[in-house]
Image 1: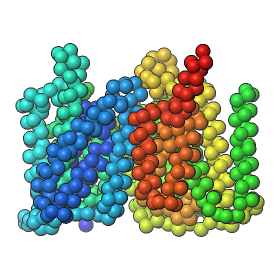
Image 2 (image 1 turned 180 degrees about the horizontal axis):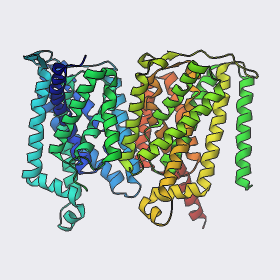
Image 3 (image 1 turned 135 degrees about the vertical axis):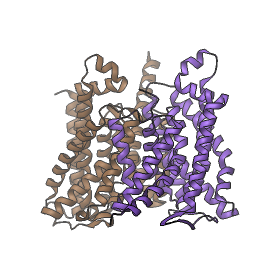
Image 4 (image 1 turned 120 degrees about the vertical axis):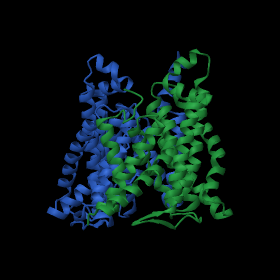
Length: 293
Length: 319
């Protein structure tokens, strides 16, 4: 039952899967990690993006990755609007806002789920492209092309976002907002505008992440529930707001899931990310690469 | 006894007598099927608001407690053929322990971290049950109802009355907490946990207490559901819909007063029953989500808050 080949196989697949988890968590790493928005609806936005990609692929035979790029501007605007609504109704009112903010995003996630069910039904949906369904043989290990695509896009996305946050003016402003909002206000800038922009970026990234989600595996309307565990596990493990940490944490999760899947079977898989999340929250809530001590 | 207490207990007695009378007079089974669900959600919403409302800890784990209640009964029935009262008592005991565990695990977590931890707990328990063959695993399990005892004609009628008892119990506890030092302490830690701690409020112990009470009630409410459906499977017993529905009912009703969750649950529960029957269960969930967002944005204090506001305005107008 246990063999080194099997383990090696699990680790390789796990690393690739982990990079993919990193890609779908990047947006949350910005919105929750940097901006402190309790964005429980992040996975629901992700699944929504997948369905948009599915629609473009099914109706107009657009390549899923291209479709992901196409919906990115729409998601950017969607993110701007979502943050504005959240800011006006919760952040500005202060005090009790956190509790209701969580309920708000939970409600939004629920609405998205139901709307998808009403539009597309409860069945699983998938996309078609040349690289889906084929695999690359590397000795004994069989690596599906779709995972390689996800891996390549995920690493590119992480590098781009890291560069954006460290090299561009706006990116640095976003990190400044995360560090000390009050100081920014004193220097005469408007932190709310910067945060809104950052939330827009975080949501725009979901366009491509959503494409990856449906490339890697078929999606169904309630898939977001499983990804609440995965994305939050990755972001919390990474330590809030660290992009490089996000990728490392995601790889740890991917490898852990893949090994458990190989050893104990698929029925235990959904619990891995949630159990890790629980453990990290209980033991080391600041994460592995945390920005807060 | 204060006058308000007398009014409350008379009201509770009238409610129970009415529920009992209904089981004797009405022969159509449908009102009991629908009524059971509404009563169940009233009890869940009231239990939820002890932790979620008074203390301000948003618990997404209602379905975890409910599901454990269901599966506690499944196990007891399969292993020992335990009767209903024992199932409910055992449910309450397991729920209290689970609440304690949740409280200890999340002792220092606040806000979103607590909420995410409760979702995580739900999925971890659901997966464990899914992998537990004895109680049916992923495929679920059928359960035989025992013979119904007098004075009830059918088992569902009896469950309806039992659930009415649970509602009264939950409301009485919630009402007691609101008016006692526990409620005041919880409200203090909701407003500012650090300030409360500094002024001598035992915040950690209060939080644990709220977790235990709320958890015990939710599990107890879930316990009879196994007999109600005569079937249990992990996917529906631990469905996150229970969490959203309960949370929505409490917040829409308003958590500042013990009556808030009751109002919310009756209103939403009835609407849901009507919508499910007349249109579809998807539309019913959509309405639920929309109402939750609408209230959280537009009327943060819920219906109770709106009532307070109306009264306040009138008083000001009179002066």
